[in-house]
Image 1 (tube, rainbow, N blue to C red):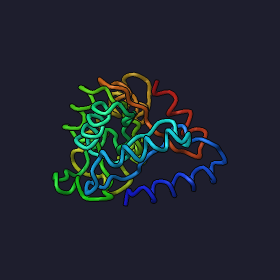
Image 2 (cartoon, helix red, strand yellow):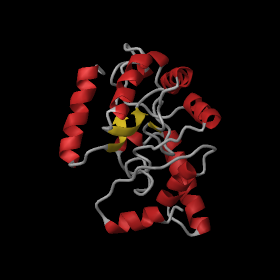
Image 3 (cartoon, rainbow, N blue to C red):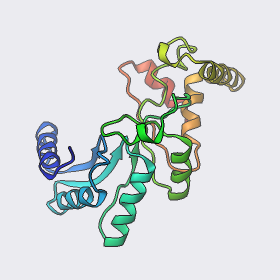
Image 4 (tube, rainbow, N blue to C red):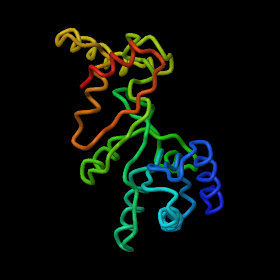
Length: 203
């Protein structure tokens, strides 16, 4: 899955589609815990030496695997991961067992253990799904899979705080992410200017 051939082919494809000579930030969008992290890092560092990528991060990687990778990088004097890209928002996600979190190709959210590790390591989190797919903007109406008692309570509290400080619930949810004890950059995707303007107010 994360073989040398597969990574090289993916970088070839990205360079062609982006029409650039070097990728500033290259993401491994899935982990494969069956493969030793040292092998993965050696492949990525080879691509850095070739001048095809500058930095790399792990998307949907557990903090345990990121720590193992960066410990390996420090030991052998090579580059490690510069950021993590999990799904994360003010939502409470369905708990996953450690076994589920270590399945190849799984989509991960940041859990409490991950948060503690990021606080200690200060590795930045560049999270996707930061507004809960519109959950807070919709007053907790959509998407339906997030309508749990815990998330409804969180939405109500965000709405109450937003009214108190003359903001929107969406801004409260984004501001919560940006006020963690480690660097957080929410990845916001929208095609509507008013949604973008609302998000910018989270600062």
